Length: 258
Image (cartoon, rainbow, N blue to C red; front, side, top):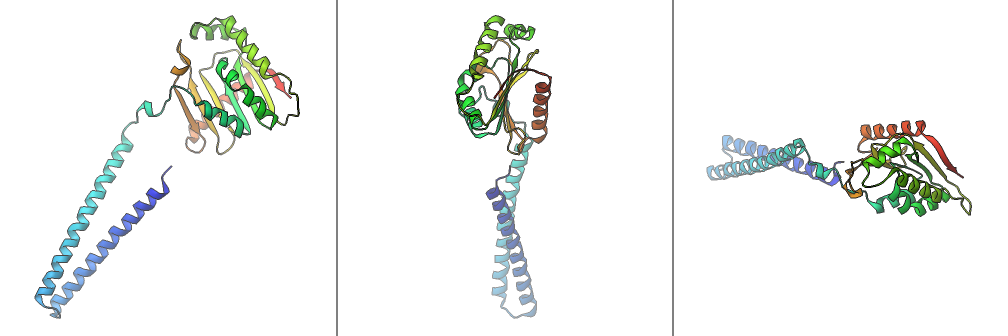
């Protein structure tokens, strides 16, 4: 999004350059008239002409400098940005906690979400009691998809992945001791997802989706991660949101609280 102060500075500079041009033209006309009518001495007219020429030269230099800056900016825009400026190797834990605690709805989707369900279980349950609607979408324990996921994971068996997932889900879906104003939904898939998804308020104008691309036998901190927002990435944001919606509708209900 353009910087308002930068845009104002550009407009201000353009106005100054235009003013310089008008002043120079006005001065040239005045000294021309004075020279023709003989109402000023030749020395004054000559000095005025020299001053006008100096103003013209100064204005041309400033216009040239501004033109060079514009060309550099256009060149930078046309140059392909490095993927290093787009991807990060890990997701931001503090950002995820903030998404959970400050949103009205959160989506969490992935293979088994082992680190996420362990790291953020307390935040999720606390936020649900205060009104958060959480949708969790994972691979069905014991399914063929879990076997495929294990073959792509780093030294993990399908039975181990399934057992850990079921244990994490049991802790997450344990009955609440007090009133609950939100909702927790868990569904399972029978295919291996291509990415991990964490979304906050996906239907809202300020919605954000964090994506982590699935990898083959790589560590957790080696997964390309990026984010899209409804405000800045409308088309792709809607695409990824629709992908989750389709998966959610095709998934099997596992648990729902309250």
